[in-house]
Length: 554
Image (cartoon, rainbow, N blue to C red; front, side, top):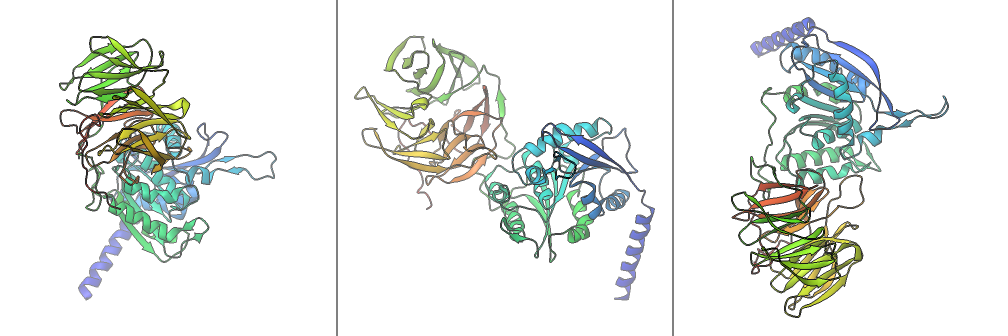
């Protein structure tokens, strides 16, 4: 016992000696910043410059929400001095930035405090503020690394959820997060974060959580339970996450006490990059490790269709193109007007919506066309062996054209219909609604007609908008529905529950389909560009024979 005690005392003395000898960094500021992303706001920020900073070498970054006040509460400058001197973390510049305020009229009135709006909100606004305004400003004077592996962000309370949200939205810029007494509750939608962590495609993040069991429990939620819920979600989803729980309240005492250990863990093994860690509990659905979205060199793309060979057809500029299985792109046919929906039957039969002529045409590869349906503006289209299904968005209706009867029937819906897809068993039709939060499901009868429509699919909505922005759809052999939305490709089961969300390659997705020789490659169109990504799933064509999927879990 005496030997252990002597060793402990020596370690403490050595640590104290090194700390006393640590070169002290410099605090510069306050500087005033007037934001364009947060119009009218003014804020102060400070910079911590370590004594070891060398302008010839890019420095790592630690951003601290709530400015110098939070940094001083944590005694962060002293901790950084010590850890950098001990080579336990890399040389880093601190950006201690406060929330914005909009000055009010009159010197005696309160300003509009922007803290909750900036910090508690989801979405990418705060990330853009840091990335587009603050980092370039500081980077114009100091050599900041642009490698996301070299950037960390931290905060307490609302600043903590802000820090996590910045890295969540932009892992291409930040990958290390320190969160103390985090406000993952229902102030501005933060209580949804744990669900999104479980459902969305994983990011390369390393996260340290801290909280105390006497934290706030108010109208917005229970901070202690919310932080444990975040830990559970991050762990289940396979993230590299660590935590320290205490018995304190909503203050910085415990966070300050564990700060040095938290920073050492966040920067462990540096400069080895932060990886996407995959847990054993989570099913990643169609994702393949190492596979990401690839942009294809095509003309402007709108809608997509696939034939039974897996060849991909896409529309754009009055033209229909085909991507052969070898990757070669050729023109198939041209139309007089803009093209709406497109569908393929028996490999070469192209059903095309010509929006200018207000017709659905059967277009042959030799350029000839024949009218099938007149007086329609079909925005999206799919088909079975019995007929063609299409949506007329502006008229709030879904059409079904029967091949046998040569007649068209319509079903009215309450909102503007968009994309549509037939289930694997070809017994139900799912339709997206442009102005509604739910997808719509209709029963397909024996003759192909539609009945028994109801709201069905529950989509997640991008932060700050009222609707999920549903567009094109497709189905795989397990009867999972893949929907292009404003929040990525949302994968829902037969019961209408979103199980997983694939990150979109770009904003503004229009359509999604499976193609390729094995129907295991997802193709999506986004703002005129076409992207592909290999998956473990297998797509199916509703124009072919029905597929019996596994029985869904209830």
